Length: 116
Length: 117
Image 1 (spheres, rainbow over the protein chains, first blue to last red):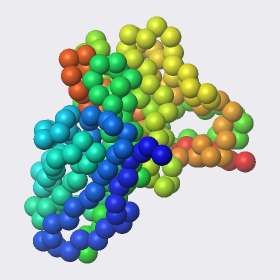
Image 2 (cartoon, one colour):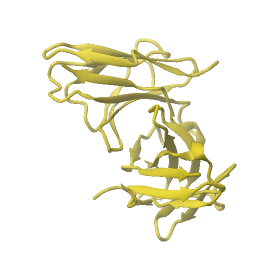
Image 3 (spheres, rainbow over the protein chains, first blue to last red):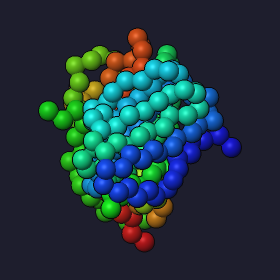
Image 4 (spheres, chains in turn green, purple):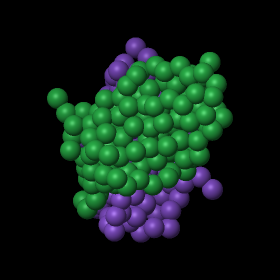
C-alpha cells in the first residue's frame, strides 16, 4: 500500500538533546513538507523540499534542520536551539507542480514530541 | 492579517443532519486553491476536497461539498447527512500562486465538529 510513514509515534527529548523524526513516502511524490501543530492551533510550515538535495525554510525554521538525500525520505532534526519543541509534527508530500490537483498534500500519521 | 479565518471554534450537529463549516480567506493572487482537511483524534490529516480559484463549479466529493463564493472570499465546507465518524477537527487551507512552481499551504486554526446521536 502506498502512503507516508512517520516514526516514532511518540518521542521524548531531554533538554539540550538533538532528535530526528523520520518521514518516508512510497507515493513517488516530488515534494515533501514538515509542519508543526500546537494544541488548539493550525499547522505551521517548518521546511519543505521540492526535489532531492534541495529544501526551503518555512515560517518557523529556526531550531530545525532537514535533509533530502533520497526522494522517499525527508527527516527532520529538532536541535537544542529549538526552545519550545513540544508539539505534534506532521510530514506531508505532494505529487508536484503543474495541475493544481498535483499540489494536494497528503499527510503521515504524525509524531508527538515531548521534552522532559 | 490572517490569510485563513475559521470563526467557529466548535460546532454541534445531530446525526443525519447537514452542517456548514465556515472559512474565509484573504489573497490578492488571482490563482489560488482552497483545501479542506479532517483531523480525527488520531492526529492524521485527511484530505477532503479541493477548489481552484478558476473552477466554475463548486467542488463536491461524496457527502462533502464546497460552497465557493469568490466575491465574498469564502469557501465553506458543507457536510450532508452527518455521521458519528465525522466528529473531528476540520481545517481550511489555501495555496497561493502555483503555475510557475511549487507553493505551500496556509492553514486556518480549525473548527471542532461534534456529531451527536
